[in-house]
Image (tube, rainbow, N blue to C red; front, side):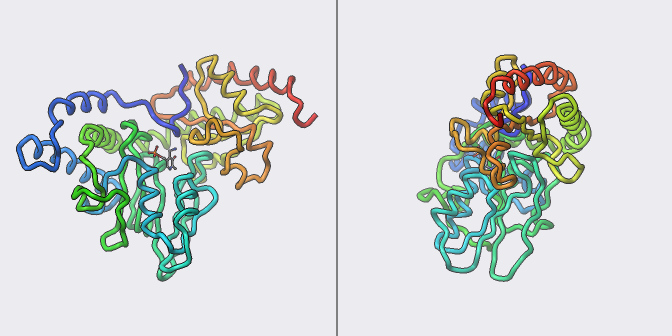
Length: 351
Ligand code: PMP
């Protein structure tokens, strides 16, 4: 299999699954309990918190564990219920939909802007700071790809998820700057200093810790910037050269996008069909955002960027990870041109 869907979720790293398997027997106890097994579980959680805090330039008590990026995003947005909430149309649905439900007109205002987009990889400018305002950024796709310093970015809140960096699905974190407004989404538990109720998911947090350690100890962002970027750029260039009617929705100039995401459109070929034909050949990609799969609406991100439904409907996201090789690019390019050609020949679009 050639797996090119890392932006949707990554394979669990072997180090992570090994640590999680051990944690199932060593750290099963309730991490809030005062007994010894509880303390041992709690130590693991605090170690994860300290590692993440250090990696993003925060204090450990500014980190709250959640079930993932969707929960982190919902928590921040809901904190500003009834307040002005300003976001961009490129945000993840967990920001956009929450802002629709909770947005109002009180101040202070919440600005929620991602630093890099999950569908195109585009690196975006964060809004200029204004008085009486708070700033959140969904950094889900950025963690491990480029070094992060929440203080330098001027953020009051930031969102992270373990399963984009080789950790398990169902665990993430929220950075909340000391003294920034905060309203817990899940109440009724004393965990996380009353900021997020629920018995600790210790085994998953151990997995998150191991994934963070792997990223940190291997300076994984350097590998992304060199090796992974080479693969992404090679695929981009070959697509443009070898596939008539292809165009890129990702600017691959260094600094313009994350090094691992390539979004491309193929004139008169429908994204879902391309994805299925590639899948039949063992090449795994996604159309627009995986979160929108099964939804026949074109990607909201590509519609916002291009305003062109045909470009959006004919788009494919190829997203790479450290495990990919040039052989994966080769294999993709032995299959993709034929798939596009076949689809273009039977298409009625634009004819
Ligand atoms: N935000 C962004 C930018 C994402 O890419 C994703 C995953 N598609 C999410 C939020 C949701 O993450 P999770 O699955 O951890 O809820």
